[in-house]
Image (cartoon, rainbow, N blue to C red; front, side, top):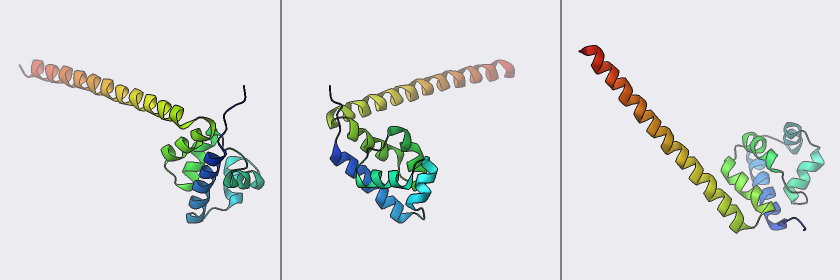
Length: 123
């Protein structure tokens, strides 16, 4: 089976990088150095000739001040159809919200225990 590739999404990722490079004080060479790749490789990413790997999302976002979510979503669209990326995104969001809720419940339980201990000590 041939892997899914979306050249339009690769171009979009390149446009995002190019726009933020123009705003930043970084050159292609600077970004290439941060990523550990050649200058030509960064040019290929920007022009959409090569697909930006997911593992470059964080260093590129940090270097260029891009919201990681925006960049990761766009990178995933290079490798998966939009419907699948949306499903992945929804699953991640649901997981995060569930973790936050369970974390809040645990914090509420800890608070109740602390209040109980305070009441017991004050008696």
